[in-house]
Amino acid sequence: MRNLIALLLLCVAWPITATPPPASFSASYTVHKGSILLGEMHRSLSRSTDAHYRFKTETYSTGLAALFVKDRIVESSEWDYHGGVMRPLHYSYRKSGGKRELQLDQHFDWERKVVNRTGGTQASSTLPVAAGTLDKLAYQVALMDDLKQGKTELAYTLLDDDETKTYHFQVVGEETLSTPLGTLETLRIERVMNAGSKRRTTFWCAPSLNYLLVRLDQRESNNDEFSALIQSVKGLPPASASP
Image 1 (cartoon, rainbow, N blue to C red):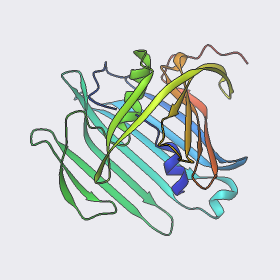
Image 2 (cartoon, one colour; image 1 turned 180 degrees about the horizontal axis):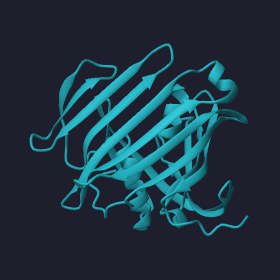
Image 3 (cartoon, rainbow, N blue to C red; image 1 turned 90 degrees about the horizontal axis):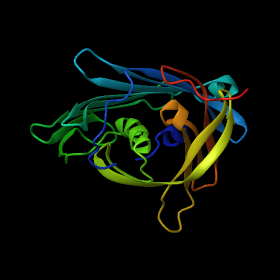
Image 4 (cartoon, one colour; image 1 turned 60 degrees about the horizontal axis):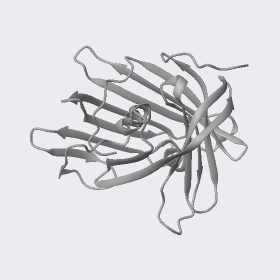
């Protein structure tokens, strides 16, 4: 399940000026290791009455894999827009059902410019946070808007437990994919890795679905290969797809 987490944490960066995302959507994916079905992922975005947004993902094992891996991972991000800039408010992570349970909470205090974090792999702490920093889930929504604006070079600063990291990506071309939703025209995006790294991350986003992720491939440093493929989506413009 650790590999599932790495697979589903996509890519992206800096202070982001954006228009609000769709009021709500939900999407489901299958996750594979090679040709073996490992599990499913469900993600949803909703807007509350106080103009806060909430993005949630839930990942768990299915089929034969569920006999060996019991982990269930639930992540949630809440944010608003301040001066047109995406501003995270609270991030939570819950891993349960397996041999090792883990939880993490990050509360963003933008008036004091700090994050109060509890749980995770380190002791609870209060960390400084710079404007434009995103959490590990909100930046995935920001990616959709950046692609909609036509950006091809992507960089995102995010808070990963108690560390600030920057991920770099680039759009490398267009590609037609066959999916359970039909044939989709997509943008192919690759993460820019350090020289010599064996890891590779590639994902495809569909303009007809507001640049929603529809497929992701990842190769680990030990050459294990994982993938995620969309199965269904609600709340976004219907795809211009053929059977």
